Length: 234
Image (cartoon, rainbow, N blue to C red; front, side, top):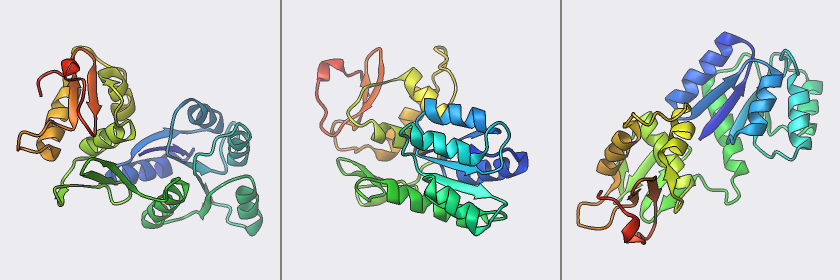
């Protein structure tokens, strides 16, 4: 899952980013309200952690403008001002939760998991493709009734493929969403990680792979493999 952290205190932002990446989230940061608002409006995030006291535009303004623009992304407000009035204002403007500073990372992570669960239309934390299951809260994968051990990047790649199940994804699209940088046509990093992921999740009984290679384009995660003429060798 992709999280935006809008926080001007460098140490706090770094603390949150490092902790969330350890939990296998993909994290981007902004150090002021103007930049944070622009990033939130022009990119897809699963949740936003939003500080109240920000340069440029304060957190309440960012929150209000996002909600007025129709964005329903879950937002967890962070603030050193823990008064009842501030909490009420944030919640009335559309915040999903409110966490006063200082806080433990464990509580932050728990509140983030909570708003992510509440925001799910199906109230589920599990993503599925055939008999492959990925739990987006525990960050564990399962297939053949066995747990799949995933690295942070393998998890991010598998989650993105599951989010876009049955869609053909180019290498450049995958790079931008999972690695957060522009695609280098000379790099084979996507192919390397796809190979690693296949080794962990695919069957060895001759069944067609869930992760399909689309010749000359990229990859697709598919429940029922079709269009064999499009497929490259696994």
